[in-house]
Image (cartoon, rainbow, N blue to C red; front, side, top):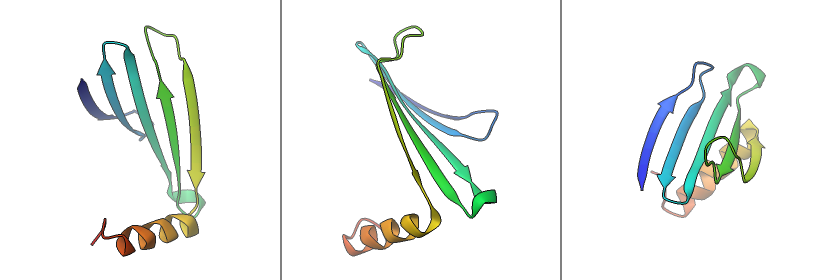
Length: 78
């Protein structure tokens, strides 16, 4: 499996894993202008231009702070 990270022209962070069966991609978009929210898009099975599965979630500032606090409590963040 080969993994790459790059930034798009629109400022998105893109992490891509390439395997024999296809490609999976995580796209992260920050929205500081809207009170700081983050969009996560997951794309799986990208073979050529065919997208097999896609899903996403948007997290606002309050939820992101709760997530960071929970990760600290779990010992995953300092």
